[in-house]
Image (tube, rainbow, N blue to C red; front, side):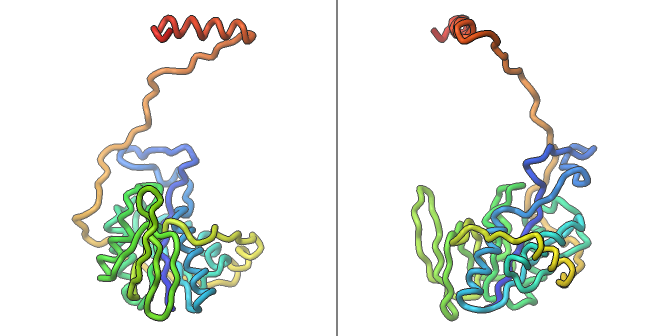
Length: 254
């Protein structure tokens, strides 16, 4: 069983995000990058299948800022067997281009299963996994929260709106968009990650961005404009209560 997990390095949304001078994207030199949370679920699901059915897990990502190594070492510490990265590209690729570059590389890796997070927090369009399937000419099931493999078939649990779960039987090879693994992602000790950093090999591929007429083009980005501020009420409870009542009466709410 040859499982490829396609991952994405995204700007950390917990940090203050800075825009570039053109105002049409983030300043990628000023933001920290982290592994997309749904891709972490995909890595866990791949390792679970390997543990249950045997096989090899390869984690592959695009590394436009030369900072993906720690994520790949962490994937190895969690149970992946091989890791690889694609370099030579600019950050901020649209989903179609991102999927095309991954597919060009995965095509020659003869996968039985290709996993990717169901979406990424930086664009939330959920297009990379289905586009991967389209470029690879493979069946696709998304929003998946459980999968078992038996021979050349996979039983896949897909979630619909309202928590409705459907079960599909899919012939392999196939592409799967993982929403959640069947158990929470395992913890990788720092000592093991450091060991991988010292001993593991990261296969590196270089690629040029292909021509793409799909995807979304960012024309302008801006930070939210402050339209007001909170009024802090001071004093003891009785005084603050009177002020609240006065404000509500002033606004016609009482």
